[in-house]
Image 1 (cartoon, one colour):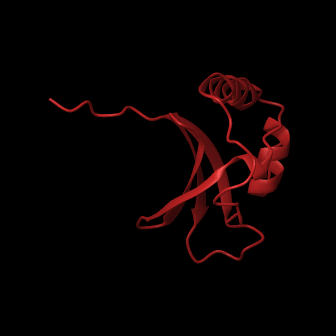
Image 2: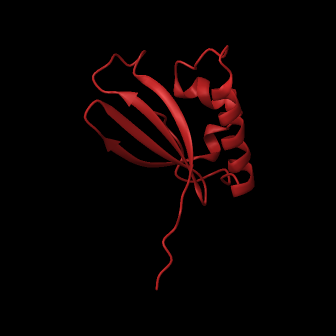
Length: 105
């Protein structure tokens, strides 16, 4: 998990976050790419400044935990971790998700 500020640097714009999502998609399509071993490595590969993301919630599953980080007003970065694995090997991957807001009726 990452220690991120609650305030401070302005967060990324939706356009910047969409560009990160596109870059991640291209990186994941590269079969020769060596997967990052930590969230910090993944952020460095995407060129995301940890000071510009905000902490979010944690979701617990059967074998996987997810840490959510707010990347921009409408994009979330989700990091997956294997439960009960050593800290050095628990990180699995990241996804960048566009948040679909429910509009009030």
